[in-house]
Amino acid sequence: SQAENMLELDCLEVAYGGIRAVRSISLHVGKGELVSLIGANGAGKSTTLRAICGLVPTVGGDIRYDGRSITGAPSFTLVRQGLVMVPEGRGIFGQLTIEENLEMGGYSRRDLNAVRQDTEQVFALFPRLAERRRQSAGTLSGGEQQMLAIGRAMISRPRLLLLDEPSMGLAPLMVEKIFEVVRTIAAEGVTILLIEQNAKLALQTSHRGYVMESGEIILEGLSAQLLDNPKVRAAYLGEE
Ligand code: ATP
Image (tube, rainbow, N blue to C red; front, side):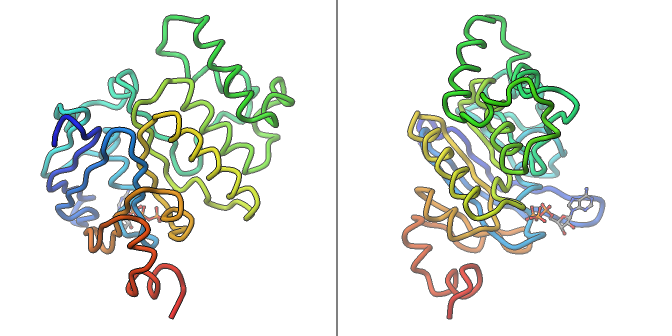
């Protein structure tokens, strides 16, 4: 039901000029759920996330966050309401220190002591960042930058966290670490919608999943069932 869902997309449509990138998709993410949205390059996953965050306009359908329509709401008001995205490419500031990047995550919060406490929690979660707190973020490895981007999102106290391809461009060991953190954050009660091209890891990590192809959702179900689905295995897990 509506009260139990943190996010509901109802026949969402997004177009870039004449290109219909998202064609009437419906999905929901329950409170406390970790849901993955998988699909090939260009399927429309990032566009879906950007529409939820108010970064691209929709041409049809409705987006509801915690029971209320947020269709067309500007992204800065959504961040204040706890709807936070970690973008593809991470969006960190290379010239600023790690600490300064994390501070940006707390910019809309008034209680600076609480922000400081949250910052220490992020450092506890990512000891690598703590060791390098006064270093400029541009000197971090790709995986460390991804940790920083997730850490910064955590400091804005998300209720719904949208992750766009957190595994992108990372070595397998680092990908494992990032997904471990995603599980930890989910276990703390944060609702997560995860977008991934690494379908196997995404489905192994999430409760439920949606498969997107050419702007449409073609399959949905429990992640364990999708992992067993012959079509998913053939098209997305590289198996016969
Ligand atoms: P990727 O993993 O490459 O990000 P994706 O599943 O997230 O893939 P989208 O980035 O949402 O897919 O792209 C969906 C479609 O919209 C593609 O055909 C893409 O070329 C097109 N598209 C994306 N961004 C724009 C844009 N700013 N202007 C025009 N077309 C775009």
